[in-house]
Length: 311
Image (cartoon, rainbow, N blue to C red; front, side):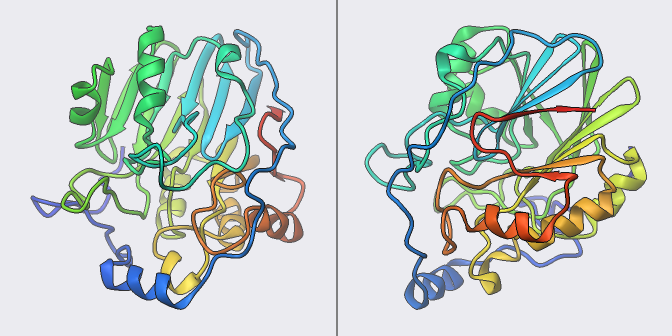
C-alpha cells in the first residue's frame, strides 16, 4: 500500500492538502442565514426487496438499503456498509434527523452478514442500535477507522478491527483496504477528529469495489485509481451538499460525484448518501434529480430496495 499523506498530529486527525471541515462559527452562520428546501415528512414509495442468502461465483449483486447502507454480495460473502435501520440519525430517539423513507430491505429479510464496514463515527453512518442488532446475530466482523474500535467494544460489538489509511484486513476470499477520505469525525462536543474517517477498497481475485464513505472531492480519487486500478464498482455519495460554501469541504454534490466517477474510471458507480435523511438545505430528492441530469448510464441511481447485478 502507498504511504498516504500524514493526517494525524499526535492528538487529532485532519485532512492533508485539503480544506478542513467547517467549525462551530460556520455552523451558526449556516443555521442563521439559510433554510432547508421543503420536503415531505415521509415518502411511502419504497418497494422492499428480499436479497438472496448468498450469491455465488463472480456475480456482484448490489442492493441499496438506504442512505449509505449497501449490501454487497459476491462469492458467497455478504458485506454491509454503514448500516442504519433506526428511525433517526441521532443519539436521541426524540430529536435529530428523522428518516423520510423506510429501509429497502426489512430487518427480517437481511441475510447473514460476514463483514460490516464503518466509514466514520457520525450518527448516520455509525448507528449503534443497528450495530448491536447485527452483533447479536453473530458471525459478523466489524471494520472501523483508527480510534473507532473503543466505542464498539464498549457496546459489546465485535470482533472489531481498526484500520488507518493504507492498512488492510484479510478475510476469506477478500481483502479490505482502508483508503483516504476528506471529511471529519465527532459524536459529541469534545471529541472532534479524535477518530479517523476513511473509504474502503474491497479486493477479490484482482477486481475491486470502492466504497467512498463520506467525502469531499479531492486528490485521493486519483491516488486510489493509481494504486488499485479502475474499480469494478464505486459507491459515491451525492447528498447533503447545500449550501456549497459550507458543505463542499466535507460532502460532494452530484457534479463532484460525476467528476470522481470519471477520475476513478469506474466501470459502474452507484449513488449513495441521498433520499432517506434530509441533512442539509437541498430537497430530499434534489441530489438524485441533479445526478440523473448530469450523468450517463454508467452512474446508477437506485431507490431504496433496488439492486443491480454488476458485470
